[in-house]
Image 1 (cartoon, helix red, strand yellow):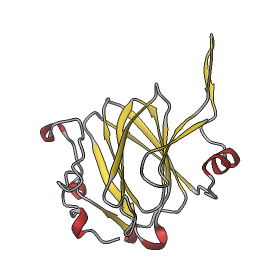
Image 2 (cartoon, rainbow, N blue to C red; image 1 turned 180 degrees about the horizontal axis):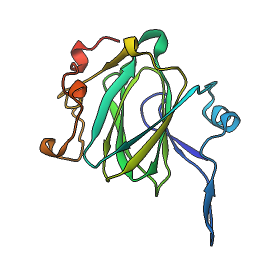
Image 3 (spheres, rainbow, N blue to C red; image 1 turned 135 degrees about the vertical axis):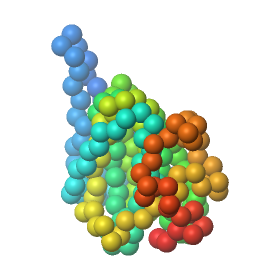
Image 4 (cartoon, rainbow, N blue to C red; image 1 turned 90 degrees about the vertical axis):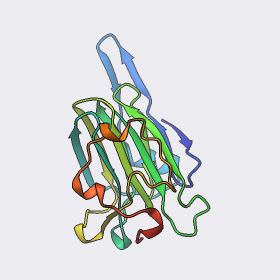
Length: 181
């Protein structure tokens, strides 16, 4: 596996080693020992989540507050997405900055998002399956978010607003400057 820093402290792009032959391909999607060793971390994932979405669905920008904050390892099983991580760690030198990357079934790239980040993604193909690991359990009372089109973040979602499909909850999230961490 190769690891590249994103420019946001603690957020990494991970490219697994893929073995192709005439039968197809094989790759290890996750290995706890190798992951922690390569990233210099001590992460223990406790929950896996998966979603199926249509093209244009935008989920985010979400995070968990306080003791329920989550680090995530995200990837696409089928289709493709534009994945976005936003540093919301108060006092961080990259606070309010974001990183975006296309994750797809073809590139098999993964993104590690540490605690203290908001996360969202835009689905680029119908029937896209998105999968991610969390190092903490979901807690409804601790869920929070930032509006996807916050002008201070200036995220290029690659689709026009009228092509986006959002949940009602995601249309009423606060701006970064009004968010509670």
